[in-house]
Amino acid sequence: MSGKRWLVVGVIAITLVIALIFLQGGLTSYWGEKPQFSLVPPERPAAEPEGVPGTEVGAGWSRRQEADQALEEAAAMALKGKPATPPDFAIIFASSGSDLPGILAAARKLWGEKTKIFGGTSDSRAVLTNKGFIKAAAKGYEPQLHERALALMTVTSRDIGFAVGAADFGAYATVREASQAALRRALKSAGRPIQDKPQVILTTISHGDEDEALAGIEAEMGKSAPVLGGTAGGPRFGILGKNNVFPRGISLAVIYTRLPMGLVFEGGFDKVDTPGGVVTKVEGRAIVEINGKPALDLYDEWLGGQVRKLI
Image 1 (cartoon, helix red, strand yellow):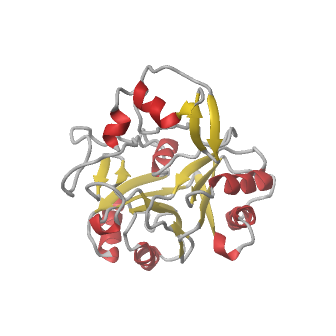
Image 2 (cartoon, helix red, strand yellow):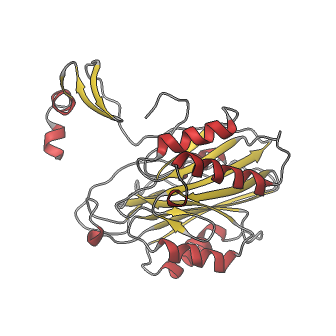
């Protein structure tokens, strides 16, 4: 992506918010042979919140195929033992191919309008939880291979304020304008003075629209708050609006708090000691050549043939 300070984390944005409010998560990819329920790694217990008085955080997941049953099961897990329901804020990610409109409708039926909802589709193969990831598909991105998986996180807090906004890119002349409109909605619904800036902005953006969307946010907000988030997963993309799901759009949340805040970036990749090079040709955001040679050939050489083997 561009060299801005914005961080756009592909696939699953829930990791970043978990870091924000004291739950620990991870991001990984998985290829398997048989779709099945999977918590990875199975031996890792969920990280316990350090404890912030007045703040309740929960996480839940489901592999039920019916949207209403999946949402209810995940919500019951996340809110178990928590008296403050409905939650103030909910992050919802479902594997691509899930009935996202049905999941959103079930959340609204369960929680009403009080709960601010943020999220969209995850990768077709899995969703992430604070205990590991829940595998949905065995491999690849073909919808017919899918099982469904849902993950959500809930937050209720007297010390953290949440507001959300969303926009359908198809309803605006440009992605930039749509993203600015989504941010304005979130800021307006927060009900705070204009000079009271959020501490962080979360985004889920449709694939290929990230740069222009972030440019719109920067034009509206400047660089007063870090922007964290990810690209919605495919091949069936979905972005959660207030009561609608968009194939191309932005789901955005602004967060206000005086609590200490920490940010974590996880990419799901292992760093290896390889030779370096100079990028000599690009097409959009794709690196085509390094040192005047096809980039894929050099990557394959540096990794001992693993790239061609994977392909």
